[in-house]
Length: 232
Image 1 (cartoon, rainbow, N blue to C red):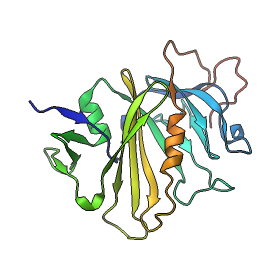
Image 2 (cartoon, rainbow, N blue to C red; image 1 turned 135 degrees about the horizontal axis):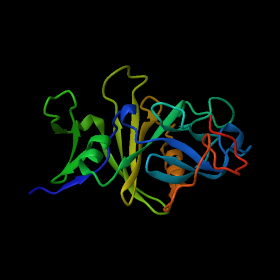
Image 3 (tube, helix red, strand yellow; image 1 turned 180 degrees about the vertical axis):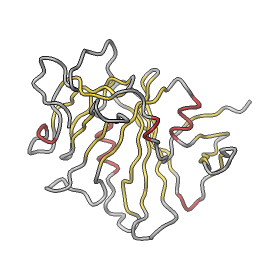
Image 4 (cartoon, helix red, strand yellow; image 1 turned 45 degrees about the vertical axis):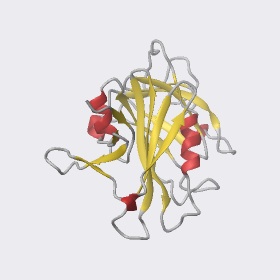
């Protein structure tokens, strides 16, 4: 029986499959929590079954609102100021996935390695066939490790569309016990190879720390008694 090792690849994570509600437990939230240096201490958040801390870095900030439907935690990148990036803009959705379900992980992450060959899914195929990457995609596995999680990422180049807007895309999954935080985004335009923002994303992910134990009661996204304002 072939041993299948799950790795990661860029995949459009369907918002409709986001797990449970997401909300702030404690700590600063929103753009006001980001200091003039573009850095603020990690705050606690809950997304589905995932309870974790993540820091606001490079002028960005993380939010999660229980009133959103479907619920999703988003890391917002600055649209102006000294930390503005020509590549990182809008928001990065970070979703909680059941890491114990290997089939779900494979579907979420959109890649697996079989007998040493990295495969990508063809979702348009009725049988959801898995096929090798094209050499022009320059698929590359990136090892990731944090305070109490291990993970992987995959870099893949666009091969279709306007050449000026083709990008190098990065997908990732951070695994802690039965839970995983996953996401994907472009980190470089192929037409501008000198502006590679992968290092920023790795730094943001490195700030993640999963929290074990019961989740505190929250009201409108903020732990009672906290001085933080609700996530917006």
